Amino acid sequence: MSNEIVFDIETQNTFSDVNNDFSKLKISCVSIYRFSDNTYESFEEHELGKLWPILEKSDRLIGYNIEHFDLPVMNNYYPGNLLQFPYLDIMKEVKSSLGIRLKLNDIAMATLDIKKSAEGLQAIRWWKEGKIDEIKKYCEQDVLVTKELYDFGKQNKQLFYKTLTGEVLPFRVNFEAEKIALELKKNINLTLPF
Image (tube, rainbow, N blue to C red):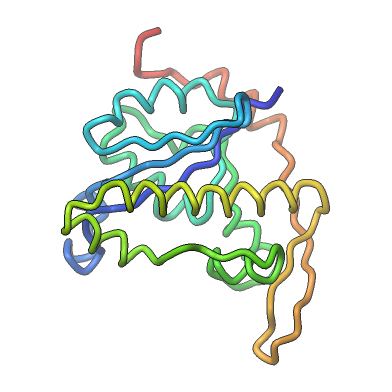
């Protein structure tokens, strides 16, 4: 059974709020899906200490644009470096295959005919309004969309995108875990005691 985790984060502020400084971005919510027990769970900023052991025990972290956003922002809180963990950034795979970066929503619509329920800026407005339950629902739905894309891509070795002319075209992806990356995880010094 796989111990992979699909995740997404939402923040309390935007890059423009913090003068494009990653170290000042604050997390409002991290949502995860665990393949090992088919469950979704969300963690607020003050609960992140409960999340770290779950991530540390995972085989691989999976998300969309996690290499350049989610993991660096989470590293503001984590006492180690999450970028050393085995991970799959689906956006990175899309860019590698197509040569361009596309939004999660665009790939999900073209591949699965499903879409995100809102945008990240809406989640920041909800944070300011104190609507953390709305943020959790939105973040978990993003995780669901990402999980469904991952499952489809892993099974079919392709995803789809819509061209500027509206044509829906397939492109190849490889979501298989690299044995080398999984072996490296054995050598990571985890920062939390077990």
